[in-house]
Image 1 (cartoon, rainbow, N blue to C red):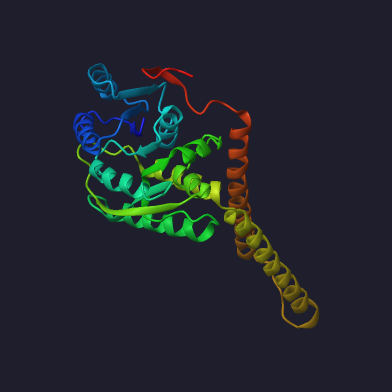
Image 2: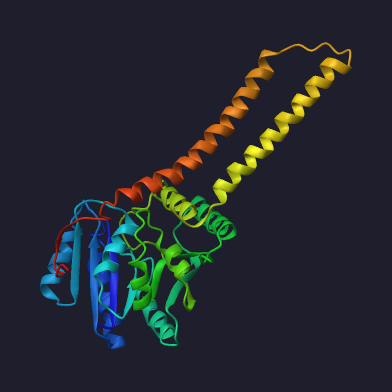
Amino acid sequence: MDISVIIPVYNEELNIDLLFNRLTNVMLALGVKYELIFVNDGSKDNSIHLVKKLAAQHQTVRYIDLSRNFGHQVAVSAGIDKAIGNAIVIIDADLQDPPELIHQLYAKMQEGYDVVYAKRNSRKGESFLKLFTARLFYRILSSITSVNIPVDTGDFRIISRRVVEALKQMPETNKYLRGQIAWIGYEQTYVSYNREERNAGKTGYTYRKMFKLALDGITAFSNFPIKLVTFMGFFVSAIAFFMILVSFYIKYFTDLNTVQGWTSLMVGLMFFGGVQLISLGIIGEYISRINTDVRKRPLYLVKESNIEQE
């Protein structure tokens, strides 16, 4: 098998047939042996039935129907686990990422690269808030991590078999695949493109899911939040020590009358209490992830699939 194409699906019934046709045309034009792996991530619409229909008509179509919604990154991971191609393409089902770009991704890989990711020059149909927050996140993540995670990229990319095998050795539950792939290394490059609007339907990536993905990325590849907590602790302690010295000086070496004020007391308590709560929250996020990984629960459960189980 030359190429496996992994397509995570969540409520994409309006896009599946068109996506299949465009992907098939691309693969036939490339002249390669290929498989299309649709991973149904707990869709509530008719997506899985359309995929099963395609699978019954075309031997190139594989499907994995997960037992519930596990999230985009886990759905992609499920496809990676079952893909047998020498090269693996990851592409979403909403057709914002053009399947025709696979030509360029695959051609670039033939030059000796293990990872060729698609870098977005523009993103049509996105709100100003989403564009701003995405741009801000990528640049913050790039500045606080030791891993060179490419900015302005999603999961649309092609990766080699040895990158896939490396990913399988990374068992963390809170997946952030673009960060993991960057961490693996090897030869990586990119192809630029302009991202289109969603073809049909509504995006499943809510702001809540975007925030979770951002949190997974930061906590998985940066210790900066913990270092920030430590810095805040020293900074606040220094201010507190300075204020103690000032208070002693005013009390014992000046004639000023000092009055213990309720307002200043409450402000001080809220300030230090807020710092402590923020610090505990950040530390708790890291501990929560450790706890999740220690449980060693399966990353996902498969309800049905036409791929032979290992």
